[in-house]
Image 1: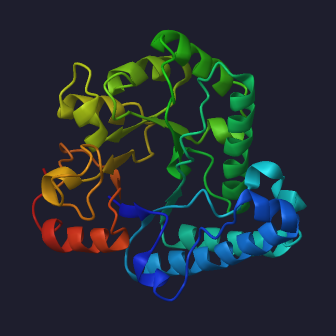
Image 2: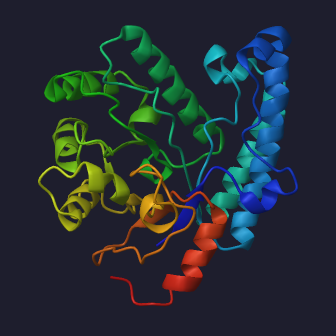
Amino acid sequence: MRIGYACLNNTLAIDKIKVNRSCIRKTFLEKGIAYASSLALQNIIDLEFVVEWNIQNAIPLYRMSSDMFPWMSEYELGELPEIERIETILRRIGEKVKQHHHRLTYHPGPFNVLASPDHNVVAKTSKELRQHAEIMDLMQLPLTPFAKINIHVGGAYGDKVAALDRFALNFEKLPDAVQRRLTIENDDKANMYAVQDLLLLHSKIGIPIVFDYLHHQFCAGNYTTAEAFHAAVSTWASGITPVVHYSSSKKQFEDATAMAAAHADYIYEQIPRYGMNVDIVLEAKAKELAVLRYHDQFESKVSL
């Protein structure tokens, strides 16, 4: 079992090591692709620092930031002036990850909506997902959900079944490197997609389901947490450890005025795994510090 975190490393940020340098659109238009390339190069250089830190601190699961290549939607990766150096570093990172049996994943933003009835939205989503897969390919990461690219359905549009059909249709048009890595996650709003809704999508295209514990509290369908967990885990192919997301409620543990679905800084309860082997991304604001604290507080205990 791997426990990891997403995107930013608070410890390294003290030394200004970060992977999400970007710029506003006006700056991008003024300075062009050369400036975006320089930012991307520095982000990838720092990604290697993050991966090395994770290796040294025994955190074998890390979700990469989707912001490493600023304004990626406006160009192809091969057009970056510094792409050869970027490729060299990405290959080196991939070799280190493989050597230490670590796992790198992605979770592109909510604007990626394969179920949208808007063809322009779908086209932009398809390009974004393709580019995420291209970065993983440069790192020589597995062509499986072990290197998952995780998204949400993104909208019900008044007809969940029709939206899921559009998702499935657009999924089939994606490049193989995306299809073989793509996963889908349950939502945190009652009118959106619970695990039992996503099982219909899995039955159509075989896409694995990433179970989010906190989201399930707000969009459970007819399933208990244990039932939803087992249903999601069952959609993963044999030999590939399923990934789940866990966060504690900020409202319950840290700030009574917080939004109900807000993530806490740390994890305040032991994560139930129901006897299954899963990899867990902690969606906690304290990032790697939350992982280290969780190990100290809970992993010495018997897992449920």
